[in-house]
Picture 1 (cartoon, rainbow, N blue to C red):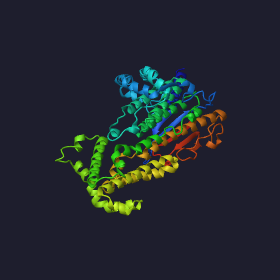
Picture 2 (cartoon, rainbow, N blue to C red; picture 1 turned 60 degrees about the vertical axis):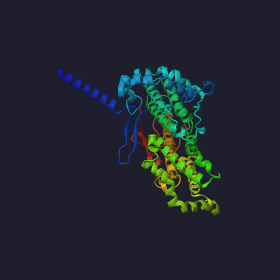
Picture 3 (cartoon, one colour; picture 1 turned 90 degrees about the horizontal axis):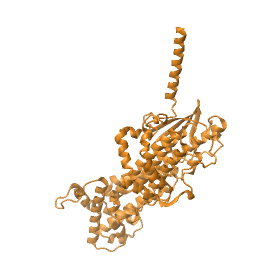
Picture 4 (cartoon, rainbow, N blue to C red; picture 1 turned 90 degrees about the vertical axis):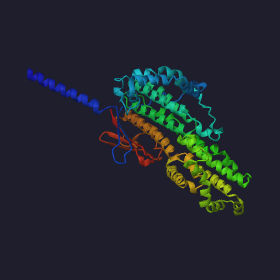
Length: 510
């Protein structure tokens, strides 16, 4: 009898260990850093369940239909919520009560969905219910979003001095929405999940409408946060298929055109006197004074950008600092070393040789500076109008050109200004494409779930899927890399796409 009981207990213990092992090894989503000397990215191991398209098709949406919206300005609700501390107050309470653990609950790289309800995450999420309902819910339903900054009309130092603290505040909103989304997923409240994601995607779209690259970068980050919660949803048993909801999202999901156009014209608005000087009649002394003023303006702008103290560049004129001295001497150095070359460049680019010879030295330098800045800004801007696959090499070359202009600043009129103010277009466009590629990869996974619902198995190739169209990889305009081996489907998003950050989805059918 004792032997039987001992054997029975041993079997039970083994069974219990196997169950515990399965709970640990086969989590719905595990996130790991890629391995390798040049690896930079993450591997998402996901269990997925078959899921047909909802009925009706758009039972779930990430936008409101026109008749569901209200006649208001979303920016008003966002800004009011920042001004009255209705966000910062519960945030302070959350960090005071939960500490750094609070930051682990809004992402699948922190606490897994299966474990989320074993933490105080639900209690923490409730702290923000009133804030979301009174502010973000109302903002999401508004038909327009106009921030009212009128950046186009700003001139001179105001352009650099204009701060947007609300841009950074929206990151906190996005993380709070992600926390509430993940709690809803854990509780399988899928209607609430989709609505919270809708608010987060719409928040990113609204932030992008500030039309500055800094705001577009934040919008890209917020879109990435929402995409992360989508991964959790897709890996949750019983979750609805979101293929058509993701397909309905705007393309590109973060549109950079207006932001880049605003940033490449920043030079014109910060230094209007430079661009308005060409074609005017001035004396030799007036041209010389203009160059001195521009040099000082560059110094002040540099100080603003780098957070330097104003008096470091505008101190006692009888005792100039090294920075002051360098900027004062810049026109003289350029004139001595490059004057003849600059005149030749102007004539080669269409100016009459006789007119160039008649120009004062300062006018030659100013004219060359305007021409070089216009060329650099136009060359930077042009690549945003081409598909990523065609533009990525050109953008990379423009980055090299800007670095060269910075290194040769004292020999290249406009080099200092260009290196300070022209946007790093390649980095921003790569960020835009990264989140777009993620969205389309998630659509592929949802198509795989549809296929599994029809056939009971994972597809051997993406061509086997016929229930819905399969998105192409937007970075290459070619099919995504996919393979099925030993019951695991692998979807690759490699850095060879032109995006340094790689991802790999390893999918197993539950």
